[in-house]
Length: 219
Image 1 (cartoon, rainbow, N blue to C red):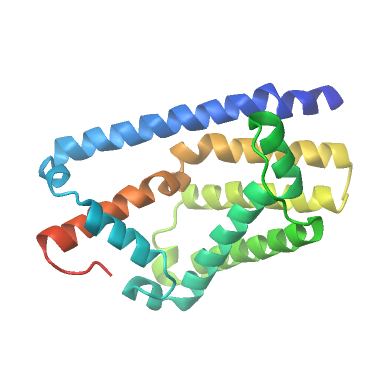
Image 2 (image 1 turned 90 degrees about the horizontal axis):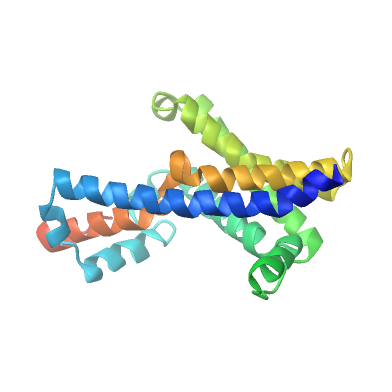
C-alpha cells in the first residue's frame, strides 16, 4: 500500500495535472473555435472594459438581480468556493505539496481551521444536493452528470476529513483522498465543473454584449 501511495502522490499526480492542463487548453480552444464559427461577430465587440466590469460586479454577493433572487444559493455558492480555495491552496498538507512540487512557499491554515472549513464545504454540498431534490425548477433540469459533478467535488472533502480524524486506516484513507483529488482535477475540463474554465469568458461576453451593444447592465 505504501508503494501505491508513493505512486499516487508522484507520477499519478503529474498525470492528473497533465490531463487537466491539456484538457483545459483543448476545451478553451474548441469553445473559441465554435463561438467564432457560430457567431464570429461576437469576437469583434468583446470589450475589456465592459467584460471586466461585469466580472467584478458578479463577484460581489447580492449585487446582481441573479444573486438577489436566491439568497440561499448565493450564500452557499460564495461560501463553498471560498472554502474550496482555502483548503485546496492553503491547507497545511497541501502547502507542503506546493513547496515540494513547485518550490512555491505559501502560508498554511492551522489544521483545526482546515478541518472546520472542510465541514463547512461539505455542508454547502448538502445544500446543493437539497436544492436538486427539493426545488422543482432545479430538479427539472438536474441530470446524472450534475450529481456526478457534485459527488466528485465532495469526495476529496469527505476523504480528507476521514483521514484527518483517522477513521479507518490512515494510509488507506489518505491514499483515497489523494486519488479523489486527482480524479477531480483531471475531470474538471470534461464535466459540469468546466464552468471553472469558462465562467470568466462567459461573463466577459455577456458584459461586452450588454454594455457595448445594448448599452445596458447585465446585472
